[in-house]
Length: 243
Ligand code: UDP
Image 1 (tube, helix red, strand yellow):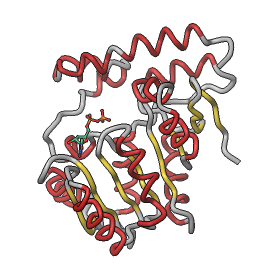
Image 2 (cartoon, helix red, strand yellow):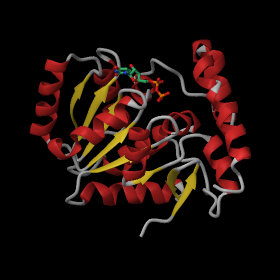
Image 3 (cartoon, protein in one colour):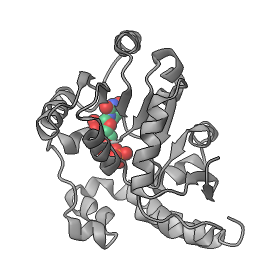
Image 4 (cartoon, protein in one colour):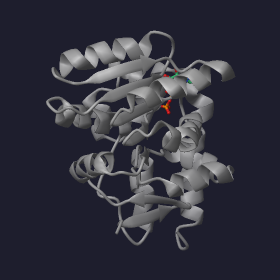
């Protein structure tokens, strides 16, 4: 039985990072083709206006809080989320667990060359990590058919999809049973970070819950997306008695 708590309609698993890592490995080993989503406040706000996205999030097999805003919001629900479980950190922890096993991994997403570079860097960082294929995230309808059949032929244990939200969530949901990967995770811009194209915020920003601020000063074009943050906070406060 999952221990869930709902934040503005999105059901999150009440898990620490250690528990989320353990659960992801269990999900990978099941017969079923499982999926993990990591919705931040921006995605929660998008899901409130997108029924398909809301449905997919709530049908996912594990939902973790990528964003301190979601952890904050959970204090108004019956069960508080114990900590932030960022998608990027989860993948790093999983690589560490999988590096000396036979488990296979596929990286799908990012600009041309980025997933490949990310894979090379991760295999250096985690010797023994078995990344069996990569594909960039820009494709036509015809190419998409080939991408699905290529990943299906490899049947990886772990499929990381970095197409940005909500594209990656919809893509995983549509193809997961056809592809048959043990576990698929939507990882947003994580390949850019793994390939060193984008710097993650220094620890101090993360500790203070200010990673969003660091990203904003680094990429001011994100301002429009970030305006969802105060909207999220206001919506939480407005709904705090009925979350
Ligand atoms: N992306 C992609 N295909 C697309 C659109 C986006 O592969 O059609 C990639 C893009 O190159 C980037 C990621 O998706 O690597 C989205 O990154 P962003 O930082 O916006 O995601 P977040 O982590 O904020 O969800």
